[in-house]
Image (cartoon, rainbow, N blue to C red):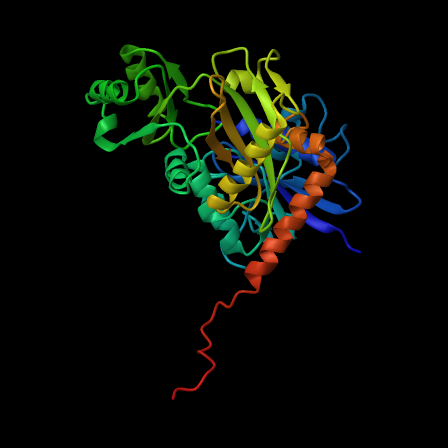
Length: 384
């Protein structure tokens, strides 16, 4: 059988650019070269797409620091700037410069691993839908809902799922002269301490834990740099539990894991820079709690119309054991030590097989969509 043609799409313009490159490096190492013909598609900080060969030779592609090897190769001596036309033209990458030597590259599946804005907020998924190419992960609407913490909380709460009390501010409430009043309202309605979060951001960028009004004012100002909508959440003294969900119409949940950061919460440094952060897999919780968190993870995934994969993050209150859904991440970190693949490894699905399954799910979902009628053909019946 011929190999599946996989486009590994990474990088992007968000603040999580480097994290994406690290995830892509791990995926490239784990994809079976006997099954897949891999094309790298690196998106630079300006948003330009560059295509290069999926060469698995570490000496040529992944030499030195793996997180920078792809960038150097894709941005310098082995890449061509490419475009993905927003029209179903055979799932084809074309050179941005018509005189470039690279011929058009057809793809069967795109594996997007661009984190944050422009990657998991529905924008990229919209382009892939217009291009008619199969891709790993949730669709346009689901990606946007999972990315937007405010919208996600509203829908989860409406479905009867437990979320921490919150307030959302935007528009005039985030004007510099209005922020002190906004902070005062947050303290009055939610108390302190509080978490302050941009509604649309990932990897804990722009997130703060504050205990007084003055710090809250500064935190709101910083969070509003990353998004035009800011959330204030009631703080809960809790353990951080995570579950990986996999599937389309019949999603399954992994064993839960626990994050134990050394810092006050699981911020960017704790996730990617602090070796003292502990990842406990499986989580040290009771069987009853494990069953409950896995059930809630699947319900949350279905509520937000997830497809392919998501990591569902929970807060487990230390006093009383109440569970709260913190957020869903539609394109979680995918290094070999990231929680999503580690959770499935502990559940019995190795990293490389997990990638195979995600690609299968992408093709399955694409086939279903391609079977839909796009031209009105009449009711097929006769009028009486």
